[in-house]
Image (spheres, rainbow, N blue to C red):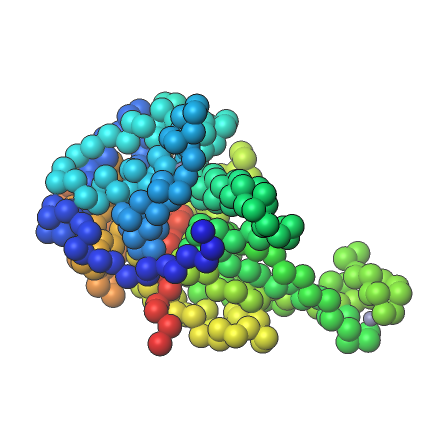
Length: 369
Ligand SMILES: [Zn+2]
Ligand SMILES: [Zn+2]
């Protein structure tokens, strides 16, 4: 399997009537599994991943069940879950298979313990990516006998096609003007929010040039000494699905940063792109968010908002998933309606409490025209 052509838009014909007309599948909480439920809802409603799974494109070429010793494969399990959620006419289900196999996604996760949703999302993405790499190597090995070339397997997989991007880190010597560029592949962007009031502001801070001077000077290969330099990050490859983590927890024992971070439904990355990028104007539409309410990542509660195949927004809170009209100022509407349904005894107005707790934003790239 070489390059996979991603299907970025929904095909309602593949979905069950319940998913076309009604809300997303509600997910039972199996004991502190709200982090898992929230991540699954967002992954299920990631259009290119959902389309890939609905067509069984991973399992049809996976060796896990066909081999002599059938074993659990993380991507097969995720694919089965996503396809099941979107094609069955159920209103409520339990992700018990994923929960019971939690260790094949993240070895140190424990059944029944509250975990960090962002960490889990990263583990799921990495586990599926590594599975694809392993299968690729296996196929390469198999074809070597029949004249397969000796070239190395490249690191591209469907998971990387979906979530992968690249950041360029450029250091420019302020003495000789020489530049050094380094490229790092990314599967998401983690933003500091300590001094920001909006997603835009946090992005600008993340990509702001930084002067390396004083104790932090740069060793220039041309000048052959420590010099002052300017360091700047930019995006050289914009991902198809952009995942942004708002860093609400500082370190392991850090307190939660519960400041309000505003964001729009459309995100344009033009100002953060590398000059040399072939792709100067990436535009994204928000399709999912994961919210954490509570004071530490090990406690509190996670839930998600997702945009479904028909473009409707839903709040997915474990077994409850209900329609939420999303408009420009929708967040307030969403949260005030939650006051009525959830009745949590919070002392600040609930819309604010909820809004400031968003921690993962997922954006789908607007089709290139
Ligand atoms: Zn598999
Ligand atoms: Zn220099």
